[in-house]
Image (cartoon, rainbow, N blue to C red):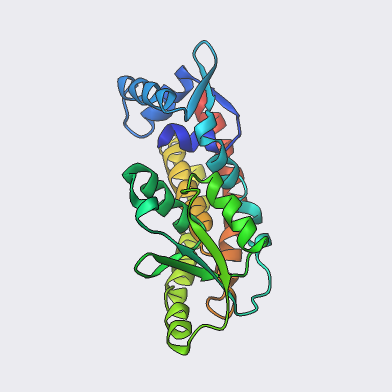
Length: 253
């Protein structure tokens, strides 16, 4: 995860083996562990070699990297909600391959779906592109191509009420607020920390913040207020600059 976390930032776009070994040292990971991880990630296609001893993101990880790099504009994909839903149906065909099914579940989670009934996942239809755009994004995330995704409205009252309660909006907002506070407090003390500890802390918190931003389901205001997410993105924008400066200084050392 450390190697992908570094490469997913896109700044710099590649790292030497020596830089990755030094990065591992900030987390107590010894050189053999970094080299073993590099070998595995290359075999999986998630890391590739640019030149002898220099690495960048691989083709298998490019779609997720592109998504991660979009954290700053995460809220821009929302649109007004007209009360309709997106439904994703999965059956035996999609579950047949366990590895493919795990990828499908991850893709559904990343796109803000919640499991509503057996074989049924739902989310509000409030993102740009509607069902066609959602199918494209799920495909990029390696979801099963046979997954049926449709728009739906006019649900019975019981389902409408249950679907609206599938997400803990208050919990999401509280988690974003807490993480934003952590970023602000960390930013205030980074200059007083040893460079190795500062590097570890900034990468860990940046990873947590981006994960939280990208896994937010982007619910409509009727289901979850988005002010806390906007504040987290703003806090992360400043903290990201601090973190990148710390890492440049650390890798040069």
